[in-house]
Image 1 (cartoon, helix red, strand yellow):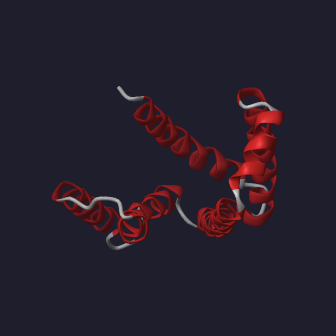
Image 2 (tube, helix red, strand yellow; image 1 turned 30 degrees about the vertical axis):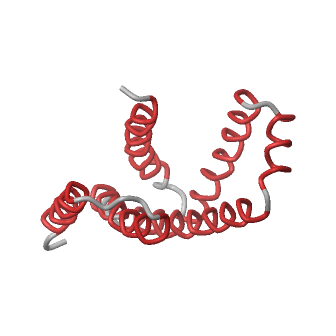
Image 3 (cartoon, one colour; image 1 turned 180 degrees about the vertical axis):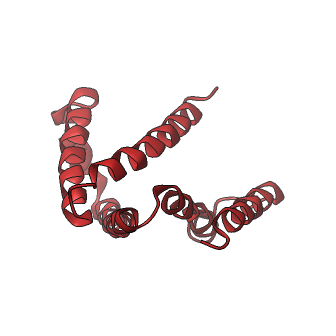
Length: 145
């Protein structure tokens, strides 16, 4: 199996764990405070990952050569991540993690559309069929909720 597929499957497993663990952690905290605590730890863990696998000097060189466009796009991605996390944590605090997580994963439909429109990625009948199945599954599983 290609390495990117292993990473993608691992990401899915960790994302599933994240939702359940976070919901349990929100029992005594509000959504915004819980998210702030989680995000602080994420920052520390990501910095450790960068230091261990890239090294600080290589990371600094990469940042210097990246250019403003890349940095700006990553900043916008951070903003949309922040907004997504805020909404997700507020929804999880009030709702059932199963349904919140399910609806959140519907973001794949947005990703598919934008990757085709903005990035010029291919859109095939296979992708269209998969997207239709995801959307159908989402509607079936959340129907009446």
